[in-house]
Length: 203
Picture 1: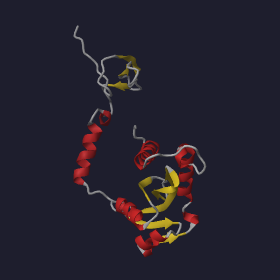
Picture 2: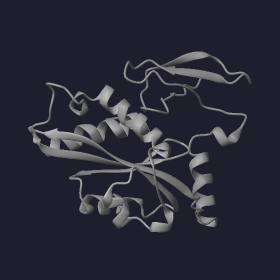
Picture 3: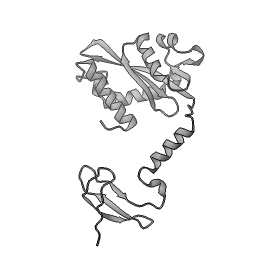
């Protein structure tokens, strides 16, 4: 009898055992490695599920079709924090999709036109059609006048996002004994949280 070695499709480990059948009768497997625990099957009735098939399909479609940039409405705002002492202010500038509440861009710096331009540069790849802000002077000077609308009524989602940050990250709380001692660590910790909380990236 021939022996066929089954390897985990996630970690390539060999600690694999049978794990029942799928709804179509295909054998399923379980990786017993504690760091993996992936369940999978080697054969699929629906071939688009085969490993690598979807990636190849998307790649071929991307080569054939131009990328369409949908119009986006943004909320822009800044969140106050400090490094070492409250005299050394460090602002988190955020660009949030008004309709999906997704973060499109963020940067750190002071509350001047220079940092606003850094945020604007990060937004250039997107098709931005409208900006909602709280009326900070930097926005008035940097953003296109015809696309800029001021008022707290349309920045409620980004304020809600900042409240989540203050709740989850102690160094962003208004009254706290937890603070950053360097701008590098301050920006890194908050950046890692955003990547994990917003985009699901492992950190």
